[in-house]
Image (cartoon, rainbow, N blue to C red; front, side, top):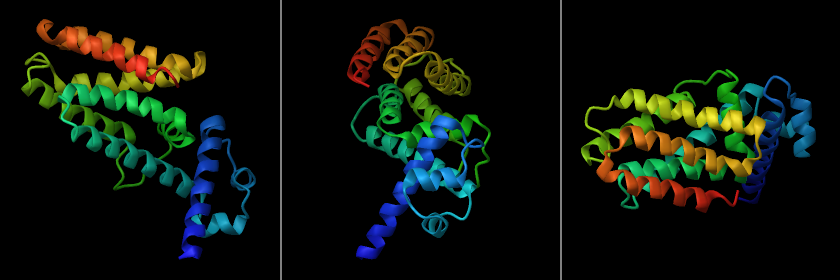
Length: 215
């Protein structure tokens, strides 16, 4: 049992080191030797858990997927409307991105064209599906205009979130991310939510910005 725990801790340490380097330098510019040095482990320990750099990238994207799906499921169980759950999910993922390098690295891997091994879906595909299912329910709950194109809105939402993260990460400090995310939601809400429901969600976007503003 103790040996298994040490092995799990070593694996987590290696993944954390790889994620940190992938996030800061990119996948192609990071070598296994650099990961070994950053993790403070031997090459043997790394190869015991991961046969190649591609395995590290895949494991990071698996963690990213588990995190996003887990948070979405947790929010669905709290009794929020579907639109509120979706909004909270985006702000929750923004916070988690700043709490550790794994999600940031996963995004950089996804935008860098690193192949995703089936059956794991590409992160952008998975995020569109998560968004689409909640948007469909939001239409049923009369929180969105009944004639919106759900696929188009879900695609726009994912593109906006990814773009906000990538552009903001290059030009601005992380502390501005909640404001940019709230600004994105203000635009989407004004274009998709009926006037009678709009004030509620604009207020929610502002509150989530404040709550997430301590990044």
